Image 1 (cartoon, rainbow, N blue to C red):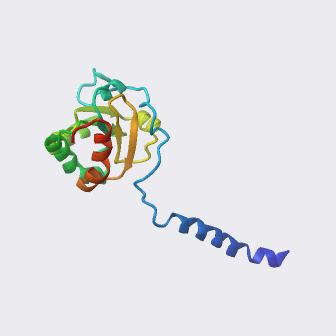
Image 2: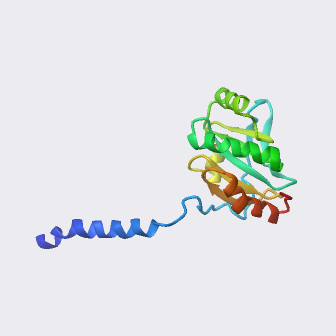
Image 3: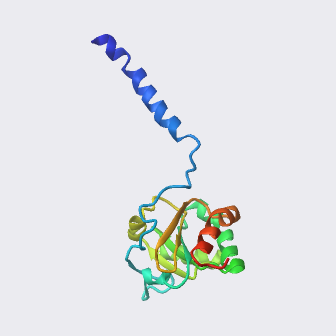
Length: 178
């Protein structure tokens, strides 16, 4: 019996190696979302700029749009901000910002300093909507259909390549003109 126990570390290392090897080559930005094909979760959160204004899932009704989850604490969000500005200004893409687990004053200062690409800004300091969306970090971007249906989830930075190859085709298929 003791001889069998001598091989236990080898068996554990072998199983761990197989598990790790199975993840090699997979794109970490392509995470499934349980919400794809379903309606946006219901929510009522404050507008980032106007705390007296409540924003709900109704903000997604009428045209396909992007929902960008961001925070000032997120270095990658800083990386993608210029591309979001470009998308909003040059492509006319409606982008709803979800300020996630952040401080309101810092978030507002960030948008004043770097520009505001968002057609609406939802303030989610406790991460409640992020939790309902299955967000585990930032940035994450969701494509939302004109009827409020979640069409796609992108994990990571949105840049021109992601826009051209992934997000634009989905938005256009949903009825957008980009």
